[in-house]
Amino acid sequence: MKKIQNIEYDDFIERYGITKHIINELIKKDIVKVELVQVNRYINQYAKNNDRIKLNEEQLNAYNRIVYDLNKSESYLIHGITGSGKTEIYMEVIEKMLEIGKNSIVLVPEISLTPQTICRFSERFGEKIAVLHSHLSVGEKYDEWCRISNGDAQIIIGARSAIFAPIENLGVIIIDEEHDASYKSGMSPKYDTRDIALKRAKDMKAKVIFGSATPSVETYKNATEGKYILIEVLKRAKNAKLPDVQIVDMRQELENGNKTFLSERLYYGIKQTLEEKKQVLLFINRRGYSGFVSCRKCGYTVKCDECDISMTYHLNTKLMHCHYCGRTKKHPVLCPECDSKYIKSFGIGTQKVENHIQQYFPNARIGRMDADTTKNKGSHERIFNNFKNGKLDILIGTQMITKGIDVENVTLVGILAADLSLNMPDFKAAERTFQLQTQVSGRAGRGHSKGHVILQTYDPEHYSIQCSKTHDYKKFYNQEIKLRQAFGYPPFSAIILILFSGINEKDIIKITDSVIMKLRIYSEYEWLGPNPSPISKINKKYRYQILVKTDLNKLDELRLILTENILKEKNKFNKKGVYVSIDINPNVII
Image (spheres, rainbow, N blue to C red):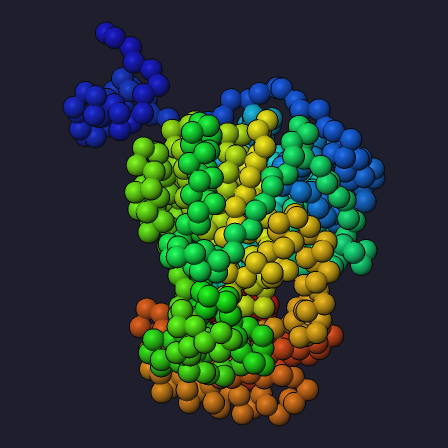
């Protein structure tokens, strides 16, 4: 009789065409034995590679400053330009932690978009790694969680929620690309991963390392004030040079009769790059939820007179709305600055760009990376690997392509419309624009060939655009921090969003009106609203909001006020079909 060993239960049934009843009879007769074996469903697909990159002088200095006193719980900001080799510093620190028996957490934004990060850590540390992210199945997540809890993994790599992984004996928490908005949870329970990391590190006497080429204004301010230790890495690894950035004034393109989204300079730049058998990245930011109104002739953008925030056109009211104070304006027929008729909502999408680029360059192999093309599991890696392996000549994408694209053959980056982020109705618009432009610019010229960036804009004089051209973060920060202080925006204050939603709009209006009447007696705070939210209706639910701005030293007192007047009333609101959430310093007020 032929002996069969180690076959899975379901495979056994399928292969031999038998029923479970027959298997049970075979078990009773001791012919077949069934054992329960735990199998890890997440397979680390990368082979371990013992090759080590020798740290350069700046990297070594950063490493030595961090590991100087391993028993001291301190926080660091590594301000390293794009391509400076921050990941190599992280891995050396983790190696040191392993030597002294300590574990590590590495957080990256949207881990499913950064396959190269996982690959590099896996090649270095092999099975010591556990990976946690949203694209794993429930079973895969469970298996990884068990490996961590059992002590079988010493390094956790994950997105935001990995900060809660049940790891003991923690030595370091690394938050890469710390400026990224994904580290702030917009869903309940709302939390900022950076704050959780600092608290957890303090409790476990661990270190925290923040890393970014474009740190958030809040983090850099903390570093300059000594709350974090500032470490600067200002040279690219492998002696690569930062790319040249050319600014194209799209107002001039319009004057010259070019009404398309593609400037003449970028068209010929793509043509030349393809002829040289190099690759192109084209970036179009679609993070916004509605268009801003801008003049294509002079670059004027409709802004709120009181808030200095771009206003948004609402089709239902036919008015321009400020999403901070609620003021409205009529949509101008002619530009108030130059009397041009070319003033209208501005917007362009990746699919439209792809269609036009294919027409301009019919022989080019073109890919697109956005929310529509990356819905399925593994789609990010498939598109990325096709680009990395030279199967695509041009990759068009949203902010997804600003992260994790480290392809040496990319020599040209085109930023199609910097104004899409610059003119969002958000006090962080300039910061996000600078970050996005700098990050995506850093994808060019990471190999031996010089990189070039062509940045198209209707507002070329804006300080975020000019600082992006010279890769000058400090100059940008010094300008931005003055404006934040002048307008009383974070980090000099806290902004709290109180959001009400429900199916019956009249009930929401009635409740928000009653709430604001109670809150206005606290006159030391600046109450704005209630107003319809920028997205005033989602999934048949109307949305109204109240904003309050407060000094940081009054934040705890304000929390108590909101608890007494809102949170304790939640059940009463819920019975009327109205739901409320409170978010401190939300990423975007929508």
